[in-house]
Image 1 (cartoon, one colour):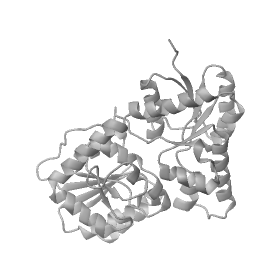
Image 2 (cartoon, helix red, strand yellow):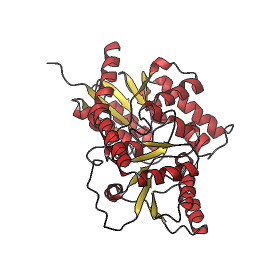
Image 3 (cartoon, one colour):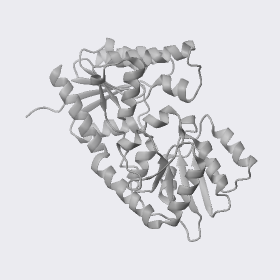
Image 4 (cartoon, helix red, strand yellow):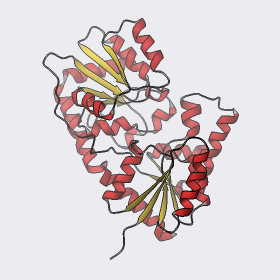
Length: 357
């Protein structure tokens, strides 16, 4: 009998972050032995500690998987292993910090460092994993990397946490539109607020959960326009979040017209599908790889609060459509996006790589 594949999952990652959790649990559910080597200490000292741990673990695994975020970790991993390395880059430092959040100007030294880290971390890997084909196109075209090195593995969601729950809204409660996530340009929360302003006379409430770069500005905008039907609970626990999802009538995706929004699919998309909730989000290149408008979700145009408001009303007034896209989205999730499905796809990729090594 062939022994299970031994995978060392390496990084400086948050274990509960959906990408890491789905990969680790998915691989384990599909029979792989996954050992975690995670160094979460502050500063550059963590890379020295990680190096010592990798030396200690030599010979105990067949392949190394560097998890997200891992650009900096890849340089340490490459020095201290003789096995194949699979790198889940998941997102570009340069795109995230420079092009999307605009923390640094494109020509700045910091921007060039991020470009260097993106490019060379991928070059050092034997195989690179990304979440969409559109995202792969960005890395190939932006950094001149060989396409054959890249493989798409979708995100999925943690089914121990995100699953259909019976709505527990009280009679007479307002129709509820829910957003959760980081308040960063990618999400386009300003368009949700503008849509809410257009619908201020409708018996609809908007709940925006989370924190981040733009939250204070969004709250000030809501206060300035006296939008009493828009709520900001702040950052909530995972247990509280699933209660909000349970009682929502519509769950929202991202609404920016930025490049990152066009080539990625956000965690909340998969969590909405897993929860069997109606999904309303924007039409993007990445989303077209997975979902069909009017079948698995309802799509609106990017950065368009008028269209967003119209789609909210359409879903509110059409219970059959809400139920249909929720059911179809959940069916798709069970078929393709559970931890077992994602783990099986990733394990197949890793097994093929090991056979060539």
